[in-house]
View 1 (cartoon, rainbow, N blue to C red):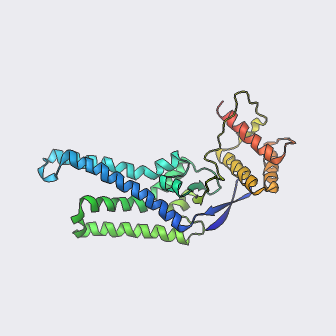
View 2: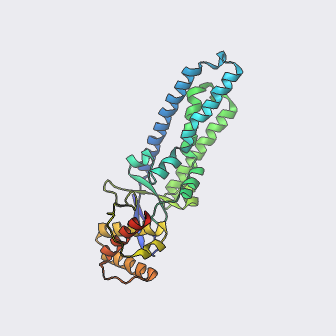
View 3: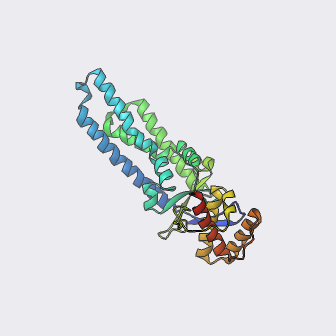
Length: 272
């Protein structure tokens, strides 16, 4: 297991653990297994509803093919949907304690998730191979289908080589989306979200916090959590001074209390 240091928007480096290769593979296998059972159940129901193709007229065959394409859509959007809704995690990633984050340590934007998804080929191709082998086993004798299967496996191998050879464990989708896959733990040093409960009677101390972007807020959250975990007063102090200078804030709060107050202010003001 390796570790990388990534700079935040406040020029403070945060250290993230790059997951071991076997963790990524197990997460991928879990996701592919879920996709496999979904396909088996969905197309099993379709077969029961329409029966064998040889007994169907042309219109019924067209309907069956249309439904086949529709049933395959959840496989295509599986990762982009779950990673967007589950803060960078699919089911497999969550089980294996992995998460997709921005290269600056914050939560990726929707556009980053989409770019990453558009260039995701490995498990989608594997799911397609499974579909072919499940319902058209004789297709492997066809030269065209054999080429498709070979291309799918080649794409998978390319993804695996990039993950192993890249310093940050990035495949091409991660490189272009500027995302990385990191390892979390059960206590999660990176929280699911920057949002937290704030009482309605709360009075914000630093409304200037709303001048910062969502990525800045995520960076503050990550810095605070990392500094607390490591007991790194210098990291918290350095971040506090940079933020005070940038937002022209004068405060005597301790660095940890100052950063915590900023996050509470943001949570209160962002929903008002």
